[in-house]
Length: 174
Image 1 (cartoon, rainbow, N blue to C red):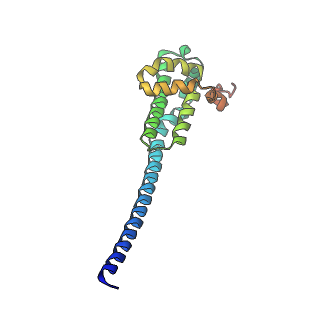
Image 2 (cartoon, one colour):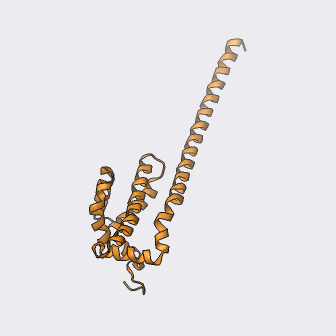
Image 3 (tube, rainbow, N blue to C red):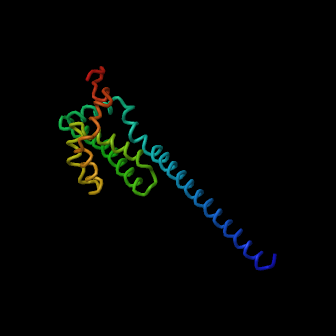
């Protein structure tokens, strides 16, 4: 074997090594993206869970949310502020999830689940009344998306049908 043949074999081996390295790096990048997406979802839940669930641990706040969900106009001004603050937190959470989905930082199923739960809440009579006022404070893109989902025949049922105790009074009656 002369030097030219050895050089050709070396180039072939080098080309295969580069190809193997590129495949390996592509897999590593993909795996890194999957880990980043999973961490984004965990951080999203960790950062937003208190805003969603803390009011439910307060009996008085839970009652106000329940009454406001049925009839927002029947609440006092202070109660409307409390309920509107909770609903604003829910819709802001949902808009953030939509933005993270667009940036490919959370997956579609996760963002769709959040959207469907929000739609279910906004289908409650009081929440829907609030939404018709409050959507002016949301981005046009998000407002169009929520309105599209609210008008979709395949939308989820109202939240109190998904979770009957949500519409129950203090004695557990609906």
